[in-house]
Length: 640
Ligand code: WTA
Image (cartoon, rainbow, N blue to C red):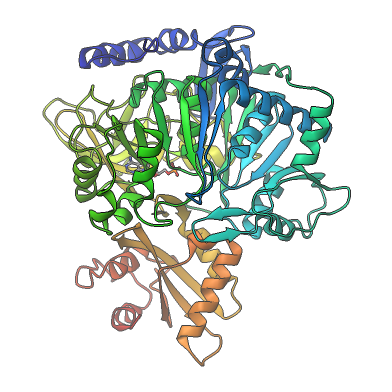
């Protein structure tokens, strides 16, 4: 039995796509009919991209956790909903059936309520990749609280910034997290983040690593103690809060080209419909399949394709606590065999890293359970694509190259596994309901003509249910960032090629956002962090091609600190960035310079720095508008 609205052939894709463009409201209403609504919508879509305002299924009432849990109990209650593999391969794995997950979510919803959390409150979740993380997420959704998951690699300062922006009064965390050979002391990072923050009312702490933690009286409580109280009362159910389709479901912070990360807001109804639709279609999920998405739930991929997409479809979703290279580079393949994984969804950076270990780590694995492979987060180079195809998929598994963004909620451009054609390095065709357009530098649309190729900036001209609704607390920022560059269009920040058949190839960001190991990092953010260091006068950060990470971070720094050793100064800067943002934002290269190439109006010419970082010294383009062209010569000759 497959899913209603699952595309079954190339012709079906073509006719569905056509219908979705001709009658978007009719199309999405018929998809939405397959969910549990307490009340149906008054209108399918109201929108304009000027304010912007986007409302899907306005007036409808639902709870997404009811759609992810309750509605599966009768038919799939004993089927695994969440499977979990620990960091340590010796530790026993866990399997939570839909019934068990339902009970755990309900119990934790009681815990949240008992601790004062109410509908609309913001709850920050800072946990490792253990089942209690999706349990916390779904419990928030069940009571109507807005979750904001923060990736476990972010620093105390980054957490504090997000807590303040979201005015989150509740935090759910762990004593620590296991990641590869490391233990990360999560609670202690939270304690540091909370120095100076007075508005946080409760911190709920789950015990995972048994790392010593300090518990503040009246504020900090243990997850297990709170659950025991609920169990003693014999509570196993929790009536889900009725939410409006347009009520916020979560906030997820993501980097842009300016300033601090933005809190992208997704809402209950549209996000649910879109993640479910894209999940069952792109991966061609069939009931009973084991779906393994290797992302962290701290990123959008984990939200949409570990938690909400799979669970709303009644799927079995496998999550992994650790990293692909621990205890060695055969870990993913061992997990695939152990759980008989059917769908594997990972990032090109992980594939490139695993490739560098050669074929030996794959040798003892059978991998015959695999049916579909997916990649996400960054462009995939052809070498990695072919390696994935041949060594992992044994040439028999379609690879879906899924392009999308935090702001999109779900996959927008991708081939559909085994149904629409795959091509190495190409995300290929838009999903039904998605209307991509390319625009030139002047903002003029380059219309698609059969047989013609084009390149330009990638925009989307019509809303889909999973599009962001706002950036938390600052709607104008949302307008500025996504809807102002090309009036009437949503601008993605990516450049793309389109071939003669209308296939898209994403070429990467055209703004000042880096994609390092599939993580989005704003150059401005890294510069601000570097500039916090006492010895730094000014800095400029650009990306450069990196064999494993896709992009590396290259920082040009004017330094006036301790003269003794560049090496030591470098380390001090790295320590500062780690403290301000987190280790993921540490520059790979730091070059000390005495000046930066600037225009007469004082703007840093990043184009030139990018070329230098890429090692393309000869082809720097026009430098005549520079205030001091001599600076470029110095930087070019400078040692690293
Ligand atoms: C990039 C991750 C090429 C792109 C889901 C986008 C990709 C940014 C692909 C969003 C892909 C994502 N091919 N590039 N298949 N998928 N990107 O918000 O530059 O973390 O704008 O969302 O990743 O990153 P984000």
